[in-house]
Picture 1 (cartoon, rainbow, N blue to C red):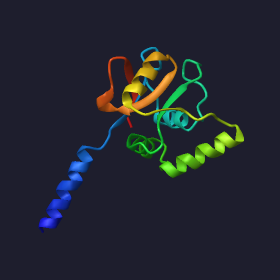
Picture 2: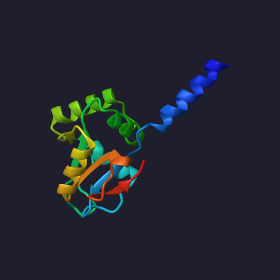
Picture 3: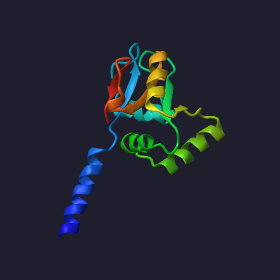
Picture 4: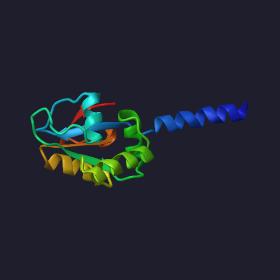
Length: 136
């Protein structure tokens, strides 16, 4: 019985500490994006933002826990599936991969500096320099 209670406590702690990614945009960017648009953006399928501009997609480095969490929620792809997906698109010349960053502060700085940038961060890392346009 003690083992069951311990397992329940540990699982609830891991859920509480799980990352809650949100999609952010520049203050001059779109006010909101649908889940379908976000999925297309981060898979290189959406070539234009609602304002007609070409998006600058900001992605975390491979292996980042927030990246895995985000794609699990939004694109439904694992890290291995993402790597295979992008390898195929790059090799065939159908898309360029998103720009990658190593931290939330860099993601926020890049998005705030470019009117057409879209990225994601943990909800706790959102600042007044960007706006949330989608919550998975």
